[in-house]
Length: 290
Image (cartoon, rainbow, N blue to C red; front, side, top):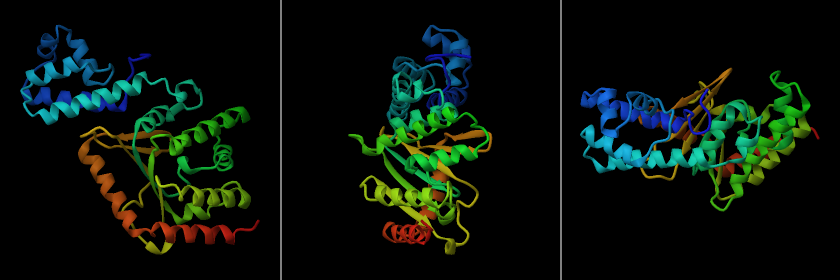
């Protein structure tokens, strides 16, 4: 399997897909595209599959060959390439954590993101979890058997939260179904502390927490949870991360990510306002046995 920079990333796959679409629209082959770069068709194939980082001169040359005259389109591709290069070279803490595992790519994207919108049906969002709550989740998952591995998973989960207090803090908009607040993960003591932690985080200017109450009935996001990750670069397309049992789905196209954003916004409008959400969270917390 490719290592170092020779890895396929979400951002690079999206960029490669755009270049493939432009090449097909121009009616050109990979060997023809390779000629303008004085490269091989194999390199073009790797670029279109997101296996290698992109050089700005290569993108500009290919766009010219493909007849792309819209500067905004070229600039958006260059911005995406820059973001991917930064994400590859950033020696983030997650790269040294053997237990980041399947979350490594998501954590890396989260680390360079500006905003995350998260919708959760059955649990508290990872960025908002206490260590005890995260530990209880890991213990209940048969995948994690070794206590030391579980502690490392908890460390990864908690360390991600440093972005909430960083110099350029991550903005988080979380919509949580009421059922996740009432599920006594780890027992009443753990969930009471978790709910208190949510209330504290809700006081941060960059954290926006809403609760979708039971009484809301049917809603657009009833199928399952997801995260919408946004970036600062102008024209950068939101990336959607969907966890399902045994695998992870990335939604990388503008049209599809827009659908998720629209569903999130509709569900947010059906949810309680932040102040009312805090009152419900506090009511649930007070109702739990100590």
